[in-house]
Image (cartoon, rainbow, N blue to C red; front, side, top):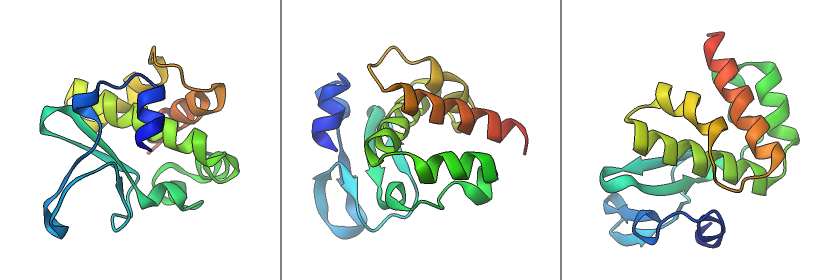
Length: 126
């Protein structure tokens, strides 16, 4: 995950965060967290183990989004989450992150951008 953040040109000071609950000073991947990812004060970004779950988004964003997520490569899921969390740290909230993520200038794949769009659109239908 750290390497992917570097490849996306995420600034070094934003890569990873501390896991105070488990006494870990710094990590990029949070294996015990079942969400998709997070961002904390200072714009620090992490990816959670939920990115490995093919059913992660179905209940919150609908069958169409869930199916695309399940069919996507892990690398595309990771990119979509990193970009979403970065957008959230810049915009100050989940709703704004949903809107901004698909528009990123970061070099994500077409599939990751499509995931970001579908997640945004799935959220609008809720």
